[in-house]
Structures are given as C-alpha cells and as structure tokens.
Image (cartoon, rainbow over all chains, first blue to last red; front, top):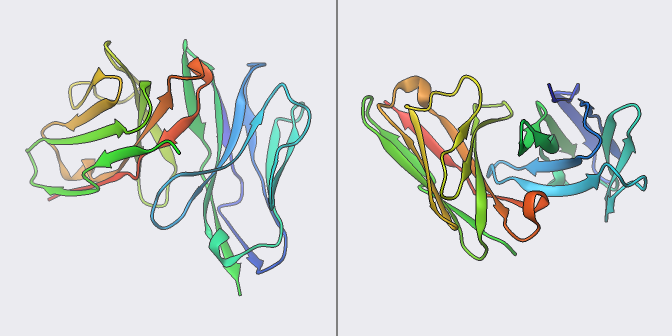
Length: 116
Length: 118
C-alpha cells in the first residue's frame, strides 16, 4: 500500500531562518508525483511545490525547494528566509495510479510555527 | 487561476437529517472530483473518487449508502451525508482534477465545508 509519513508533528523556526520538513513515502510504482501543500488556519489547501518522480532535478519555487531522493523515497521541503505568513500545517502528498485510479494520498502533516 | 467553489462553507444540522455539499469547478471542466474528510488536527483522508457520468469509487471503510456522491456534470459533484450523526461532524474538502492534462491534470481544492451535527 502507498503510504506517506511525516515524522515531525510540529516544527518551529525563527523568522528569516531556514527550516526543513521531512517526508518519506512507500511505493512500488515508478511513475508518480509528489507534492507539498500548505493549509493555513483558513483550511484552504494551497499547493506549495510539485515534483515529478521521473525528474532528477529538485523542484524549486522561490523560497521553497525540495530534496528529492528517489532511491531513499524521501521528499523533504526546505523553506528559506522564513516569513510569518509561512506558519501553517504542511502536508506531503503522493499521487499515482492506485487500483486503476489516480489518487492523492496525504501524510499526517507538520505544523510549522514561525517565531518573530 | 482555476477555482473550485464548495458550498456551504459551514452547516449545522440535527441528528437524523441529511446534508448536501456541493463542489463546483467554476472555470474548468472536471471529469474527476475527490472528496476528503479531515478531523481536527489530522490529515485529509480520501473518502471517494467521483467520476462524471458514472458511479463513485469509495475507499475502504467508507459507507456508500451514508455518503452519497453524484457527479452529474463536468462542473458539479455533490456529497450527501444521509441520516447524519454527531460522529459525522467533520471538515469535508473536495478537489477537482482539470480535464485538460488527462489523468495527470492538476488538482484544485475547494475551501471545505465544516459540518456540525447536533
């Protein structure tokens, strides 16, 4: 079964510092996508960054970057120059063809606090 | 950008009644929509996959007769919680896959519906 594990229920970082959120996943598929979503208190799911498994190059989006280690099945998110607005729940997600259908499976989430 | 409208955003109902939640893709067509449930401080759990013009596919453990899903058009899917009970109180979120891009099309999320059953 495909699973996504986020081992850090909570993380905190000083404003302007860098923080890394961890994510591991388990799959036997070779073609899949990985995502990081942000869920602020409004509970709107916001896509932060996306990585295609077939791409070796790590995805980056401004202050957000990932460290994708396919062999280790690891997909961590690095947030540089943390800002107060980055405070939210962050969910790692895996998307692939599962039992004949494209499905998105989420990890447990990491609550990120930014200290001013 | 692509917008998914979910309505209502908040609903309170009495135990035993039914509640319908709508998920609309406003500026794109969605052949597939997904319904998630999120308990407080927990992750999103996929309940079912809704396919336009066909029956929904439910995840293991989700009662089909309790959570009725209808996907009658390319822009609308509905989730009806039938005979609601307090344990059904939760946050329900839909996501819609843009038909452009096929099975790998981007997913867009609604703002969610907070259901409270008294």
